[in-house]
Image (tube, rainbow, N blue to C red; front, side, top):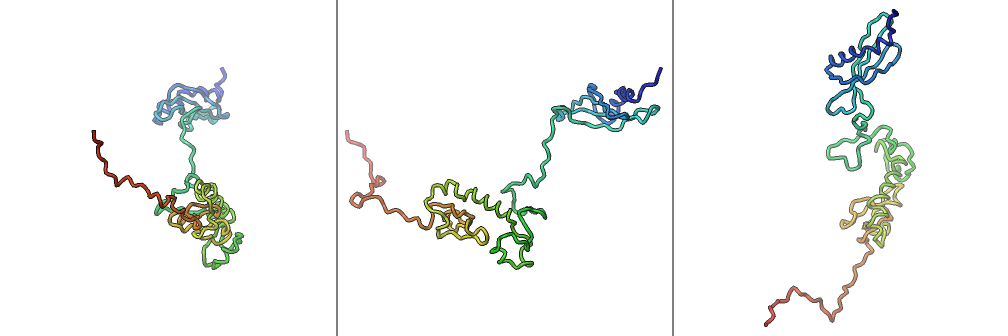
Length: 243
Ligand code: SF4
């Protein structure tokens, strides 16, 4: 009778694999399958009835070095099977953070290669803004064209842009308002800051935004006629009607 081939010894090592899982603290269920990895190793899979691990399986990898070598256990591991309950994919904080998340005392570092910024002494196309800087002594980085375009687009599409409900219902635009303080630099023709405490005070507004507190809005004259004074029913005394 010829000796059993190593590959068959690996396939038959179900009890060895099960014992290894038990020794590792697991409680393997039914033997599900054996997967031959190569000429010298195979993986035995068992059911795993663990709370919170629906669909996971115990796996014991067995190996053999040659024809006359014994079968040994390489590793024991719990692996997800088809349809197993898995944790959501990890998302780095830099991709999870959203506008408005920054709180007092929080530190939000920008990456050295943040595309929104360029070194101060790189020409970012904003000649007027660069002209205000002490090159080498002022800010280390300034907005890149990409960072500037992104901000402009956000502001234009946002609450103080021309498509907002407020702007759509306003007759006058910010660009002609006395409360409008234009920005400096490349965005000076398109955006400014509102300085009207009753409107968008302190916010960057699009030149095409507008509101009912525009400096050109004039008060309407009273609509009542002098010969018919307003009727004030708050001064009436009410008496019960006599029978
Ligand atoms: S008051 Fe209204 S129109 Fe004037 S700058 Fe402010 S938001 Fe614009």
